Image (cartoon, rainbow over all chains, first blue to last red; front, side):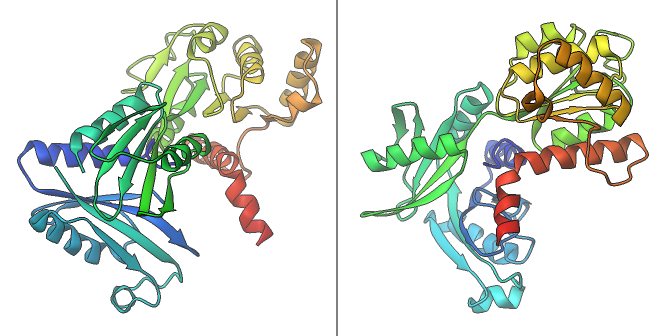
Length: 110
Length: 238
């Protein structure tokens, strides 16, 4: 089942509010998962240009890296597709130890 | 990502019209699909439109591979709903917890002293009789129904309406003895074993709950386990 009926409503509202205040905003969405991953496809995280964020794409393991990419997307406007998993060095450093893999799409909100 | 498109997807779902947001993951171009209409800066092919329809029916956002690259289909379906019959003590924490879990909650109780805004701040209340309220609200396969009054003349009509609907979860508060008497009354109304099997009674997972909030946890846990029965089955099979 989709998560859009639940917590994503709050995240999208916050993204809209930030845009309304003239802030740059990026949205990250889990687009695929393999193995045991803590958040389902469709899970979202929104970040503003100051690094304030709401929502999650994992159990907290890769959020730091996703926020960095979100800030970069706010600057250059280019969408990004990120892979995280146990074989990904960066993800391992920040601790995606659940054995799963996730793919996260990051885009600037216009 | 156009904020306007996203807003429209959310509003459409809230108004009861399912929508699928299709994103080309290379270009970031998007289209919002509703029925056979689509809008946005992406023109999805027939295969993608068919996949979007399927995703809406399955209620599952999904990644599809096309000759042009990866496309993400995100489903915006109307909210899950919970109808609580009986504005009693347990209903207070249950309404708040269920809202956190993503349910649009309606608490129904013809006794206006119970169903008061002071007791249920921010919760949608109805003081209609349950059969009237449920005829109006039309429970569907994304609806859970829980009866909490212990009073047959309030609970029974709600159970009858729930059994005649495609509600994915039906729960009735009461001891085993109360539940046996309830099923006897429903049998007199012409309901059968297959109907009885749909009613969780006594309601909730047995976690030894004592306080109203703990009982609300046990009820919401059982609703969740029913909603996610497919996932549970897959995991137990693995």
